[in-house]
Image 1 (cartoon, rainbow, N blue to C red):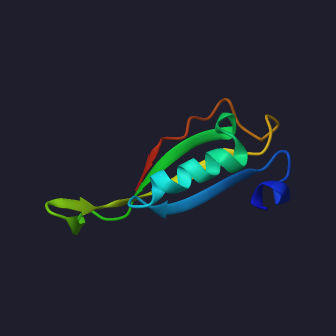
Image 2 (spheres, helix red, strand yellow):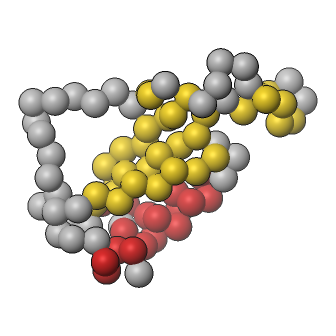
Length: 85
């Protein structure tokens, strides 16, 4: 439904925990098609990771950017980094 509501020039951005991002990416690829994936941005949420499993800590979330069509608005002169925070 999100794909149908998105304008031809629009971009969908979904934010999710690093624990679940890989599952959501597969679903979004199915809904929007892999060719419409723009990028993944890592959003660093803490300097002190909280414990998840063993010694691995959680410290970021993922933002997935998808376009509906090739007409999405972009600025070729601006480079946006893929890690925020």
